[in-house]
Image 1: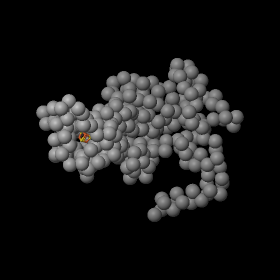
Image 2: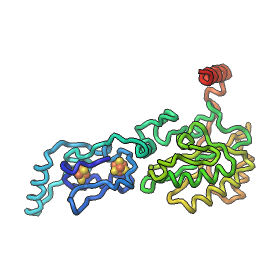
Image 3: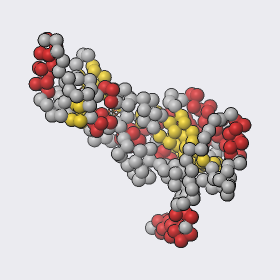
Image 4: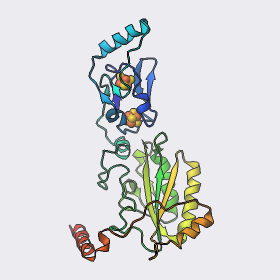
Amino acid sequence: MRIDPSKCVACANCVPVCPMGAIYIDPAIKRATINEEECVECGTCFRGMSQEHLNPTMVRTIRKLAKTFLFRFEPEPDVCPTAAFQMNELQMPRVVRQVFSDPVVEHVSTGIKGRGTEEVKTNDVHPRVGVGEVGYTIEFGRPGVGVRFRDIQEMTHALAAMGVAFEQKNPITHLMVDKKTGDLREDILNEKILSAIVEIKTTIKEAPSILETVRDVNKRIDTVTAVGISTKCDEAGEDKLLAPILDEMGFSYYRAKTNMGLGRASNPGAVKEEAHDEHLASVR
Ligand code: SF4
Ligand code: SF4
């Protein structure tokens, strides 16, 4: 993202709009400026404000006069009066910031916008987590915090050392150069994004050691981490295997999302069709 200094009139409307606090008024040049290191290319400043096309010289002159005569000339708070924002054409590695942070940009690797994964929301249809298994979504970063890929790699290294399988349909997995070590592409390690999700799956027996590892790595990385776990309930809709483990470990948890088994996977005809499609995809 870029702010055109020839257009900016330093009204500061955009400063509170940025979820990363990356925009500031530079007193030396009297223009809004973007801290490139902290900007995650989310596009909020560009899309989140109305753009007016007032003449910058005219606006600056009126603002100067207003100051002299002790009144204010300010645009509406949700407006950039001179349309000063410009979206850059981004290249690798910086473009990963936009792909992970701008909700309207789709991940090429999965065809999904946002963090680029459906997690286990579609477990009815694409059973990622089976009986006796635990699926984990390890989320990094939040607005105002963000995360750099080197911190995500710290976690993927620790998990890979435990022999976990990383979910294939996940953008972070696609950025791995070695899924056995959890190594991410070297060129993106310093890139900062708003948020990302690492997904893995293990047996229920392995859950305590995985959760301990996540807790341990979380202490030494410069971001916030939230863990979601999922498992398949028994026929009565109860979880009698994973819940006691979480209780014993002292985690507080609640059931957040429930797949009711109403997806196409419950329909044997559709499952057959889907299996056929997958086969076709694999032989093409
Ligand atoms: S809203 Fe527009 S004119 Fe105002 S400070 Fe930001 S970029 Fe400059
Ligand atoms: S693109 Fe996003 S992070 Fe970058 S300056 Fe704009 S609002 Fe802030």
